[in-house]
Length: 261
Image 1 (cartoon, one colour):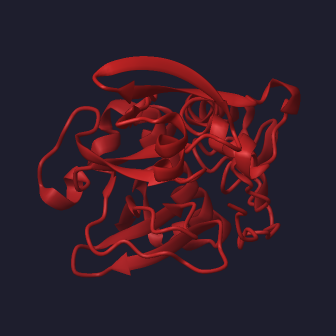
Image 2 (image 1 turned 180 degrees about the vertical axis):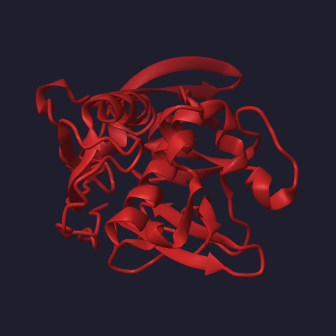
C-alpha cells in the first residue's frame, strides 16, 4: 500500500524559545510530526536540547517499537536506514498447533493494534495516573490477512507488539502541541495551564490530557497524517485531534492543549 503525500510540509516562522519549557538557549528545530513518520513540517528554533532529548526518547519507543516494520514497508524516512527490518515474525496456527514464522515485509500482513484510550480525564472528570486503555483497533497495512492465511494453510494468525502506551500518548500530545504552537494558537491559552509541561516533565498525568475520541472512523483522502485544532468554548479548552495514517480509517486521538484565556 502506497501512502499518500504528507499534507503538513510547511516550514513555519521560528518562535525563538522552547515550546515546552520556555528556554531560549541551544534551540533546535522541532518536527510537528516526527521525521521518521514522514513529517516534513518544521517549527525552527523551538525546542531546547534538554526537551528535544526527552521527546526523542519517547518517540523512539513508538517509532522503533510497533511502528518500525510499517515505517520500513512504507518507505518512510529513517536516520539509520540500514537498521530497518526487512522481515517480521508472526505465529501461524494450524489445527491447534502454533508455529512462529518470519515473512518479508512485502509478504507480511503488517497488522497494527492502535490503542483505544479512555476520554481525557479533564473532559470526563475522572483524573487518572498514567492512561487508561479500553481496547484496540486492528489494522491490516500489508498483505491481506486472508491471503496470508490461505498460503500458510492457517486457521488463525497471532501477532505480538510491544506497546508503551504512555510514550505513545506523549507522542500524540507532542504532535498536537507542536502544531498549535506552529500556528500560534498557543497564544490564546493560559500559560500556566497547558499540556507542554505534561509532555516533558509529568508523564504520569498524560491520561488527563490525552484520550481517544468517539465517533465514526473515517479516512481522510490525500493525507498521510491529519491534525486539527479547535476551540471548545463550552468547556473553555483548546483541543487537537490527531489521526496517524489518516488515509485509512484509523482512530482519532484527542489532546487537551490547555485552557483558553
